Image (cartoon, rainbow, N blue to C red; front, side):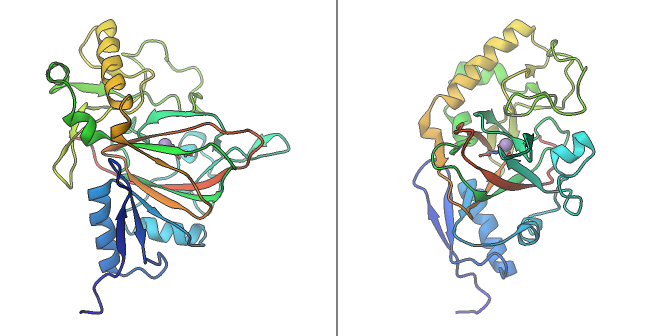
Length: 291
Ligand code: OGA
Ligand code: MN
């Protein structure tokens, strides 16, 4: 066997998406390994690498092998990077020092969403690396949006075929208004700032079609009266998020690294005890305009 072939193993979760990558050292991965990880990512949509100790420099270097990284949303909206030397790194944490948040997204539940779909060119994928996890709660669930589309009732599919959806950029997945967006229009869904994308998108690498919903709150089906848009969106969201058969849940351990494909996956997070500590670092890979 050639020494250049990858020796990693892919262990599927057995659910609708998700797999563990084992026998891969992220610090010394060769190009063949990265190609194998990418192929597994396209097949399983969410990958987990468990039990390796590494820091921001290694996280960034590994993430960059899947494409150039975007700056963190917090950096984008507030103009201030959490760590000035790493403007691409987000700190996702509920930990407070002297009553002041040290990271984003707190301890509350996070609603189902796709990361940064309000951008004209939303990210290809996100990597989330756990440093500290609470004793209970804080699981992250993932949803296979190819499956959600395939199982969509025909009448509903007819209603959305060829339609565009507007994605709200003013609020994050914990429901908080983003810094720097105070005072913008948030009541008229037809006017809220954010990108417009096809509601059925074609994955640029697999060629498969996926439902692309973004976030429920303040989204809008372009061209429909608002009331009708709300009705159709409610039906779509009930269908997509109401079926555990489309999902897999990640129960975090410290040192877990999870990467998900934002083009065909949504995710949400359970809340957890505010007295527990949860600390994660996140990067996102730049993506293309959905079509
Ligand atoms: C995110 C996110 C989920 C979590 O960082 O984009 O949704 O489990 N995080 O913290
Ligand atoms: Mn997210």
